[in-house]
Every structure is written in C-alpha cells, then in structure tokens.
Image 1 (cartoon, helix red, strand yellow):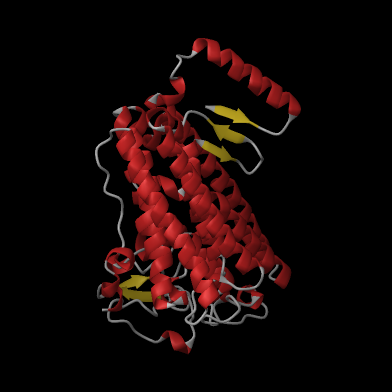
Image 2: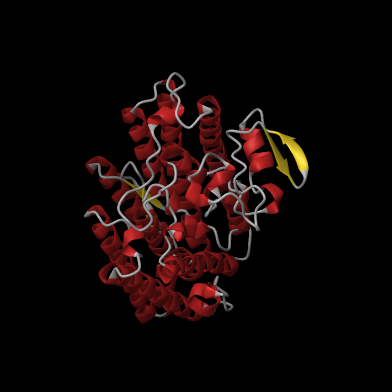
Length: 429
C-alpha cells in the first residue's frame, strides 16, 4: 500500500520507498491476494476517516445554526451536509459482502424514509398509511407516541431515543430516524416541487426560538443535534472497525484470501447492478417518481450517484484520493485480473470509466439547472435518456465484473438483483 500527496519532497520520498520495495518484494507481490486485501482495507479506513471528518464539520455547522439561526447558518449547514456525502458515498462499495458494514449501514444511510414520523409535513403527504402506523407520528410535535400499541415517552429526543426506540420503530424500515437522510430532511424539509425545479425550502426560522415557525423549534433543534451527534458516533465506530485489529479488517485479513477477493467483487457487482442501477435509478425512472430519488430533499442525488460509481472504480483499481489530496493506493484486484487476463482487465477498467462519464453527464445537466428529479420526469426525453445511459453503463460493467470473477477462477458470486431490472412488470403491480 502506498500513500502519496502532491508535495515534491513527499513524491520523491514515496518514489524512493517504492524503488526500495522492488528489491525486497516477491516478483508477483502486486497480484498477491493478501496484499490486495490490505490495500482494500487501508482505503476503507481512509474513506471512513474522511467521512468522519466531514461529519464532524457538519456537526459544527449544526451547532452554529442552532446557536444563531439565519439564512447564512442554515445554508452553511446544508453545504456541510453535501460535502459529507462526497467521501461517504465512495464507501458504499464496502456494504455488500462485508456483513459488519451492511448491518451498520442502515443507521447512517437508510432511505427512503417516511418523514412524517419526524416532523410536520404538507397536507399532500396524507395522514395515514396501511403499512406504517407511525406515518405521521410527528415525534417533534408529540412528547408521547404509540409503538405497537404501547405508549412511549418521547419527551426527550436524545441520541439514545432516536437510535434505540425510534429507528425502524415497529419493525418498519421506512421509520428512518437517524443518519444522513433524517438530517437532510431537517435541513431542507420536504421537496414539494415534484418533478419541477426546486428542492426543499425549510426556513431557518424553524430553529429560531424567538420567532419560531413550524412549532416546537426547541424540540426540532434537539432532534437535529442528536441526529448529527449520532452520525459522528456511528462513523467513528466504522473507522475503528477498519483500523489494524478492527473487526471488519480482521474478517478479511484473517480469512481465506480468495474469499476476501470475492468480497471486494461482491461489493462492486451488487452496488453496480441491484442497488444503484436498479433500486436507486431504474425504479425512479420507470415510475417517473421524485420520491424514489436518493437525496430527495436536497436534490443532491446526482452527486451521490456519481460518487458511488467512483467508489466502485476505486475498489477495483486500489486507489483513493483523500480530501487532503493524499492518495492511498497499492496492489489491486485490477492487478490480479491483468495477470490472469489482460483483455478482461482493460475491458472492465474502460467500462468503469464510461460509467463515471455517464454519471458526470447527469451531474452536468444538474449543475446547468435540471435537477435529477427533473431528469427522470415523464416526458423529459433527453433527461430520461441521460439517466438511462448511466443505468446501461452500470449493467454493462457488471457483466465485466462477472468476467473478472471468472478470470480469477473464483466461485460464482450472486450479485444483488432488483425487480426494476429483472422483473419490471412487478414494479407496477
């Protein structure tokens, strides 16, 4: 594993270290499975450390908002939230195959959420759901709620209450009380523009105790602060899991090497196909539904999808550029595939670049003024085609990931699927 940065002296030192390493490492060290797993683990640690750093910056921005609510402090908190998504989305390739990560992930990035559980919503949201008795519980406005027929004290919206009682209350996944998207909703509010221009428009006065709008500004502030603190705490847990001796790293390092390589490819294929191409993109495009947009309150979805794709590519190439410009890199799955079959390595590497380019095309439209929810709107032929092109690229690269698995003579891997790709008729039933 190599860590480098843009400084001239550091580059010279890194070069010297690499040169020295050539004389002591075995000739095929770059394709050794254990070395690849170490790189993968080192990059995981770096990504989660960057996610933690940006979450801590978000937490400080939330403190500033609550201390002095204003347009400026609210916008600063929103920008900090967006910045925090950049490194975090690049970690999602670690979910599938790493059970520790997947079991943990629901606390920080679960979606979609029934936001009426948390706070006030527009009349158009409705008042009840057959699938969720807490659909409009509005815990910010109510100091007592009912879960599974039992009265629950909600007078103190502490981190422990949010994570231990409210998160997935009643065993319902849509009751998302913690993580990025709960914070997103509290910073933006509902996006009531449908597939038209505009994101959520929560006013800063929802946190102004002297000029409160929306009611219960003190409890809303407590909820936001608790959710922000929890995000920092949860990310710290994952940083610890990827440090030397951490549980997630040990599972890979101490396991059978080929199983570790399969874990890397499982994450790449499952995120690429079932999760990103299917559940996060094709489903919303089929339904032309902004409620199926990943970052639906902030209209930041184009960035989340882009950095997911970048994360998949980084897992394959064994290289990650940190927020400070430092590059963490080393022996990679790409090196292993290149040794086994150079043509497949080039095929997959090229397709990963194509996918990132297609995601950048979605971003370009968004930056130019056409948000992701507008791009998937019914009748937007060009926008729909831009999103579909990215979906097609994800599906195509997944086929090459499968070929990479074969080239390494690994056991067949079952990637996550999606009805929206595998059985689209079910989506409309």
